[in-house]
Length: 398
Image (cartoon, rainbow, N blue to C red; front, top):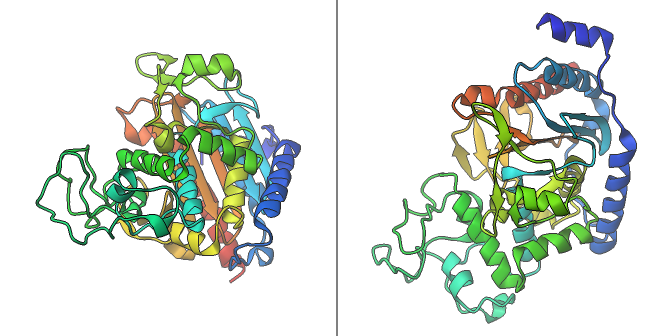
């Protein structure tokens, strides 16, 4: 450990958490969700009460890592334990607890949640084909739909320039195993045969939601935010400068190149379901807490979301993918995560169900991709801090 980190740990002269801003949001969101969905909840196999809390150590180590990082950092970090804020740290010019960020690929978890809510409402069958929903009579009631189950009565060799591969299912889009390519092009591989991360696939899921709900994706996000009182969540269109003019709390994204300058990112309809949603860190962590507390979908749908369907190549070893979530179970520690990168913005989310521990990290500075190890070095370090402390807690209570 570097001397500056050790000094930080000894002095403790770093930012301290401000609990009220998140706690109020979590409470109101939970109350709203409870009124909408009643007492439905997911029974986690949690032994949290029997573990010695490591939140204080984790908080201090995360603070030290950010302060001691050789890379520039601008953003907001929040740590929750049992739904209660343990750390609320902001750093960077103009960054406050109310600052909003483009969430990059953390948006995919919200898109997957909206899809599973449509499943719960009987509007979507994940085993039906993509073509069925985009080009059939999808009006929100599966009993009236005339599509066939993907993979039946179709020829893999017949390329229809006005259709996607008939074998592609919504399940495959959610898990990045569809191999989908642009309309009129042959599929990249046999659907379901392998993993290939696909932003385009999640953009198509946004189109499916628009078809079955007869409403724009942006409007659906707005209704979702209102329903669960996630007031810092929105779907905006246009350049970052234009959005900032009407949403002053949006932190302008900065891109590191030869110099650090505004990124010039533009949010359009295709990007929203993939990585273009906007939220503050308190809002996203409130969403995440509601999700993993069983307040946003049925227990069956949550189980679908958090099932490991396919192994993936990623920065971290032994990773798998569910629906909009990465999954790791090394050393008996269950971890649900995702990361994101767009020009001007980076993000990371972590959830450990056994400890009911959440971390959300939103940044408005994207580091130069010429050195990928450097770009994600702080993310990797913070993840390892959390994992090492939780594994110590498990060992001490074995």
